[in-house]
Image (cartoon, rainbow, N blue to C red; front, side):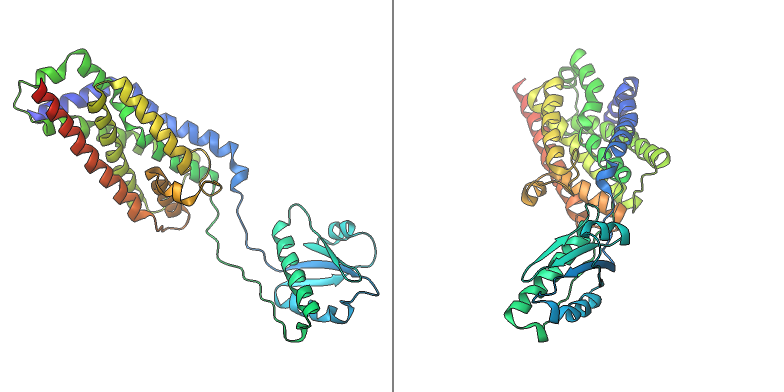
Length: 353
């Protein structure tokens, strides 16, 4: 009996295939539009290497006896100072392709940098200010300055980012794909008819969950392939990424069906799910990249969608992620809790009727 019901629910979902088509082309279109629109925000960070810095110095500058020491320390840290006493600082930067320029006065200094050399400017400012402090304190003879260049995560491509996270976002809205099935049940009063069958509340629940999960997984799988072929999205570890997406689809489907059991309305379930998922997406990096988001980390970690986004994007860019476990565990717990609540609610309804 349950096998027949699952098969019938599959037919109903594919008969109302517009939702499935939206699930296939929706992520592709949105990913393409946003990847193009926000590509500039994902310009790669490149660790600053060696660069040239110009300087000019007042003949009465207190730093004059120490300028050679500064040049030696700068060279040890990849900053090569060259004196330019002709023209302005801006002209020297432009004409000699400098990373920055320092004007040393009698007892002060001023640093110039270009808009596209902010990292070089920060290094130059740190180097000179630290050196100046040491000179004033009288510790310049034994003073050492070391500039650290930490390892940075590989640069993210906007196409990879949006091509991945919108698969996640659509996956969490899985209940939308069940609209045709649930509206058909309400129209033909299927729940009331099933009360006279020997099917349990759990079996009826699974007859909805299995077709929903399979339909959404198939649609998003096709969308992911199209993203890779048409947009060039890289998924990193495909098997692990697929598992993460599948688990979140199960969680999202369970969550949506729980809302349907609680509200008894397909429209209300979709509305509540959309509101909650939109909020999770807003905090978890669906609309503004989590990399650039100024929201507190603790708040982002409360959002299940953030863990999936973070794990999948890092698997794509680095081949590994510390968020894989949480991206699998949190949706699994959500699926278990929501399934128990949905089945329990359905059982109570049957006894009341």
